[in-house]
Length: 156
Image (cartoon, rainbow, N blue to C red; front, side, top):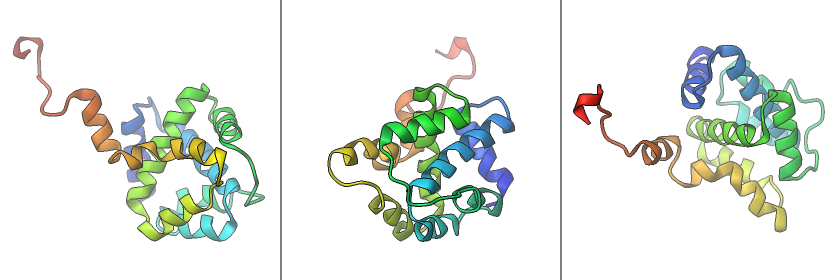
């Protein structure tokens, strides 16, 4: 998969109007995630992503392994993306879900293992909600009711 396919898929899933907004959402999520996890985990996760995308987890991060909670994660993503926190949270979930389809399961499990234990673990699980419920395709089907959509009003 190359950069255009990656960003195109995310743009479609998030229904964003342009590539700029899409890249900003991807950058916001992955640089913040890269700052939260150790450098070796970020490099493992990045290894299966397009070169221009993996840089957000590795090269764009000045300090890996920072300790911040879920609310701080959302605040950072929201600020970087210039989006409302609820939108940023949804975007992050969709992006993480898509990343989970591209990386080896062991690398994705390592990502999950790097996040906090205890009380805050429940909050961090929100990042993986789509992954845990069957992925974006199942979530999208649940929202649309699945099946073919009618082409015009007369078919309804």
